Image 1: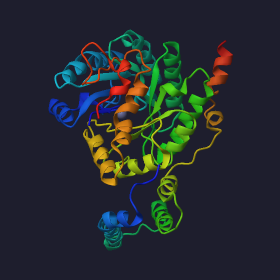
Image 2: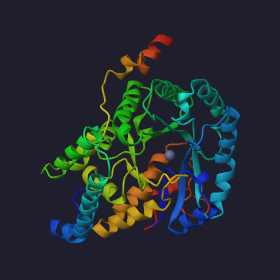
Image 3: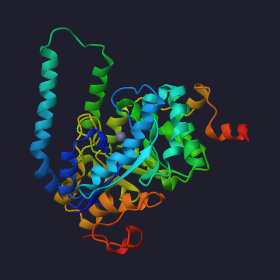
Image 4: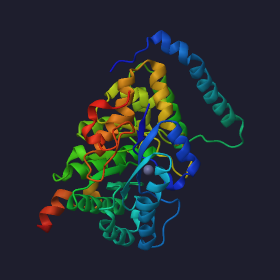
Length: 95
Length: 286
Ligand SMILES: [Zn+2]
């Protein structure tokens, strides 16, 4: 389903919003720098840096990639790790 | 435009909110059972909650012309307590024949633990045994992707479950495709802080289409906006989407999904007194 606006229209509508959001980020980073102490080595810092590089990339699914970056990994053998038989196996056993 | 909020927790909202929803075009809503903000002490406390959902809220809603439906379960947060959960699951059948009950929900995972998974599958058993529709809560923030995939594993493992009768809520950019590709319905939750904005929900509609997709406010006792669906309607209009598409997302899709439930006797506000939405599908309000 296409977006009914041209890229020019999107930019006209969102330029000031984008500018404001970037300014918010810049001010947050400045605030981190002004505060006492250090967050060097905090894994959240490197996540933020990685997210910024996704933002400045040209891939078409930046929002999804950033979501995944901030997500726990999924492993398809989780039921075995929990020692849980899958629902299908449970049913076979009870019948 | 009329709209239907498929996921909103009205026990946490004031009567003024009912009035505001009605003024904004809300003609129906469904309220899944959820966490009260504190862990309840006993199964009897849930019995009272289920009475509130099946007796009190429909009356409060009706005062403003809003038709109220509900879903019953013990939520994922309290599911960590397995013995309490089993007691609650045992009393749910007492309420399944109440006039406004649509099914089992919102069940799901919260921190993706083993106990949560155990109680989730026991809820699935209950739904299958009583031929109930299912409404699913997916976790928030960093737990969402993993939890959604785990939930889909458990649902897809069970061949008795009709995927067209399951709604998976709180989908976002990284989970919506998995839910729709497996044949389930998906709900986007418009929440001010931890979930999706109206703008991003509109993006998701543009990227994934309008089939089996709906939007909700999940208004509750936390920071939330019960009138978030009108915000989405406005965003879609501002982008130039046709009214027919907007109506499909906020009105027709919820009705199509809920109509599969025996308890759904929704009457379109402009239908003749004697006829219900079931035989009025061709003449929804414009
Ligand atoms: Zn909810």
